[in-house]
Length: 183
Image (cartoon, rainbow, N blue to C red; front, side):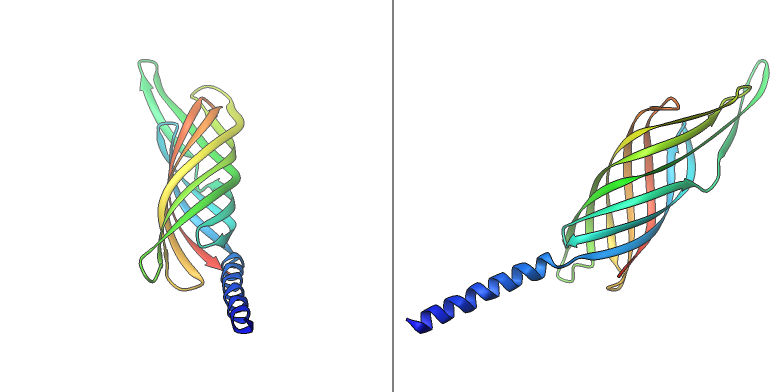
């Protein structure tokens, strides 16, 4: 009887230890991204910094701040002449990430993401004053991540954002490439 109870206690302890080891896989990280955004019918170049954490190998969250590298300027022409337009936007928010590790080594992961962002847009139409607007964006995306080492990872992600008609824009398509450093 004592051997049975001892074996049962060892088995319960092993399961509890394994469960707590998986739950304690809290990994904070910082990252930077280059972002090519298709918005205002143009491609804008942006950069982002982010701070996040993976709570376990399948779930994490991330806060970000995205800013333009440059404002996009373009010309249009009609019978009255040439008009110059200028646009840029910045955003910040929170994303939740789902990770699906692949293979035995699990250095590759497929990512899924959903989140919310505050978007601040500037748009100057030809012959008019600059417009500044802000609103909410609802974001979804997918991509892949490769863990180069235990601390460093690279990631490529495509993201679609639905906006509440900020500066006349109702969606943004982002393609990002970046690096992460885990603590």
